[in-house]
Image: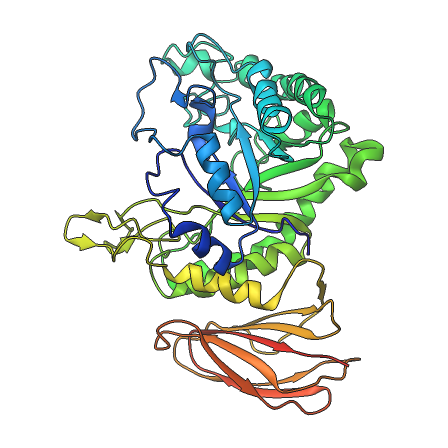
Length: 448
């Protein structure tokens, strides 16, 4: 597990981003990276003026007090590493694509003027959503003029993967001229998610051009499903997704392939973020991605806002409440953690930077299991009972390890009201426990 494994996204329209309670909440959850300035807004955001591209209509307001310096103040209080998404899509005047010079000046300001030491930078957000594949996308990209006509954007080479790959080289050159130590990531699409497999292929065409120069590649991935069971089951797709992504990356990166990391910088439990199942999803989510080769995984996002889910229930992509409402659906008070927050917290109790993921198997189809060998020789376990009706009695056999006790146990269930801590005896290399329905349980046992 890498030091930069666990991340959370923030956005410049979040007026509560730098609220005094936020740094401690981030620290308590275990987040080690904060992504800024936020999703699609990154492609219309200009850091020096803390403003959006001129002439663009946008749904939310860029808030005062959340500019880059204020963000860095918050990140430092949270003891978190920043990940910056630079504007790829638009220049400040709205007359063309973003200029590598603007990104390079951001690097210079961050690391040579302010000495912040910002190491990680990604170029653009979901650039493949700029209309190249479907005529009208969601991502601002003025490398081709936006005439508001689908025919002018569909398959326009100025919006395609080859052009993005070429521009990546210009961004990398300009930014590393200011600080050669920075690490720069390229935007790819997640295998199995649109527009993967649509010609011309985005990932291979980007990497053919810049693969030997990138430090990491970036995908986004959101859970999906119209029931709790369907949502939880989507994590089973992740091992194949990451295997395919690595297979796409390696052939085009040459000698650099072994150095290119896989980063997932945006995702959550779509539709269930305010419900109990969101905690089970989050606990499974991060560990599944890490143990299958992802260096870094981000949750989207810190604060977002109340919306109606597909079934009319309250949802909010923020991991903390912003005390908003939609119709008769009201959120709890500001900065109240939603269930995924507790799933993330359990994850950080199981796995820490420097720990090693080890194979773990379960004979029960609704019992998800993850295991790590701790740096101190102990064992960290995550056991997630996805069965909403039946408890699971589990006997754990730690092959090749002798466990010491007592082990610390942490449970998050529908009736725990938070994370409940207890201790349990350990005998030799086995451990037996019962996990209530719909409960995520973290176990930390010292080792010999």
